[in-house]
Length: 125
Image 1 (cartoon, helix red, strand yellow):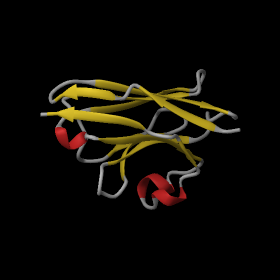
Image 2 (spheres, helix red, strand yellow):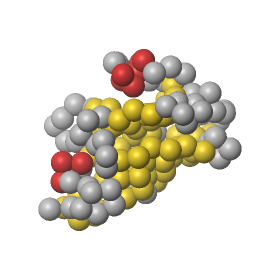
Image 3 (tube, helix red, strand yellow):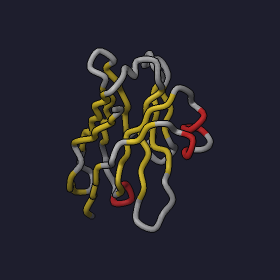
């Protein structure tokens, strides 16, 4: 059974940092694009960041560029999201995801194959 399990969410003050981690199991994800989406209450799900299977290519939403860094460790089947200079508008449920192509990360998130259950990030002002 394929699973993506996130951890590291929580409550932090504005300006603070959090590191989200995701462990994938059930098969190897070393050839998949992996990434993060988020969804705030009442808002649409939005792309946050993604990373190629080799780690050589990354992309991030304009709203998080310069503040969030995505990385992965294929030996451990993990992907992480280091979040700094957090803002109240970063408050959302963050989802770890994986797919064999970039399509879902750059255009239609509904096509992304695998999703974690989500972890809550709350940034207080």
